[in-house]
Image 1: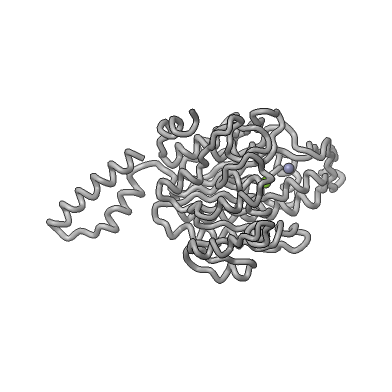
Image 2: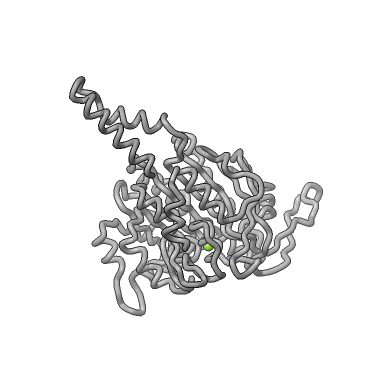
Length: 378
Ligand code: MG
Ligand code: ZN
């Protein structure tokens, strides 16, 4: 960041000097310089398919041409948490969001109670806009890992409280009840409005919002399954978030989660998995289209862990049937795939650890990590 600040200072000095001589157009000048002078991603879209392993993806690819398989850079990601070879979504979300492994169940707090700063918070501190979208409660473990610090993921009321004043520009999911119909009777929807958010409580209300901070609390609890009518919620939310976040010319960080692929895995329900994965992939399509139109964008598609121990043991080519086998109703230790496209996407390759995702995003933005490590990780 020092480098960026220094550059800006030099440019503004140059500009001031030039302006005094020849009435130069400052807007055009700084924009042109910023877009051509470095190799940094200014917009990062991270899409997490919760519980999405290779078998789930391959099964979905039998029925559809997946957007995520068109991303040119691929990697494998190990997912163990600090205290268990099989991670939960809290520890995995924390690893991806902060680059630090913690114990299962924890959200951005280390086993010895240190608070960790997420990539979303760091993006905010660097003047970028930020957003979170999930097809679960927005206070659920995966999105919570980008905005909250709590000892256990079950503290969803406290996670809701930490959204207020977090500075996040857009968040969309379910979980309105964690904000307004709370046991402690505090109405955080009022607080959101006071903090300048437009609060949408349905997809139709979401569509009407055109500019400025947006809190989409679209369902009282979790959004419904695709098979039970969730419809265009995720793709519409993705489109809307990209529209709002693009108002910041300095860039943004956006995390989008397909939360219920995991729930289909826990249920060992292939139809549930496929419907949720295809919906998630449609959001990947929206992100990819945006990145193709906005070349300073990095798109990353990955998973926090595999769920269900799913294997494909039927000969689909000859039987025409997709009949997977599941070895567990829980998560597994299998590495998960990662796909990347766009600015600095070449950073993602080979065998990685989930903590590397944070470090590579930091690098793609051009953020200085040494100061951060001193501040956070000691
Ligand atoms: Mg999740
Ligand atoms: Zn799970």
